[in-house]
Length: 357
Image (tube, rainbow, N blue to C red):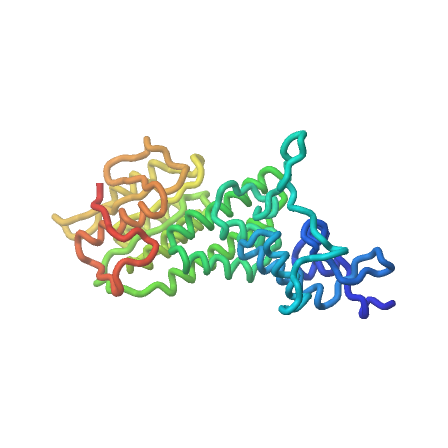
């Protein structure tokens, strides 16, 4: 009988969905998400209604719904809304692994709701859904989940509790699997960056009255820009002017940018000790500009895990996290009244502004 009549193979449907054939077979074995027809009673052949069921399974798990619950809903797609959605023979699913441990001890298996093998730990449900979409290389799902997290929780929480844990989990997986999952990390980073930049562009504009900008830059040799992009989005929400210079800014270019723009603050990102340049940071903090007798120097924020507290000198602060960095910078402008927010404090950025220490 032709494949056009009975449908496509497991390998073909897995490629279409962006998952592995093993994942498709696992869904069938655990949750009864299998094809209605098998060629010669043995080989799986997926018809259009079967594929629609799997697509719904992918969509639901990407949104953070545990696989067992998603399977029950996905089966309704094939059965129809008026039919009993409980899986029956020959596809009655076994209880999820680990539901009842054998007497010899607990099974070491992945629990429902995991991130498809990524080491996530205790995280938000949205984080697990994002991890599943990332492993499947499902760009549209990642984009939708990231935007939903931003809309629901605000920038700071979405960054701290959804984006960062997933990025860290992918990084740990990459380090532990002999350079596998690099493509997952690249695609996830791209969509996180796209979401943050969109947030910065669409933030309500405020009146800056010609206020000095905040200069954001990675130190020479430093390529990790996502934390600075999150900060840029948060500053845009508060109506604060920024100049983003991105990754690996040469020292001379950074000095020239500070002298030419006269920033209120300079944020220097260092991910590792090897890129933290304390001498360059001191130079930034000592660079004064303005009229004679009223010259000022920028506040320098040493951001990122690469900095040591020993690098701190006069005119520098070391914020611990996105929220603290936003509040420190906002305090500079609040004291001078240089920026007037058009619509009040931006959602998800912490509300009140503390004074500068």
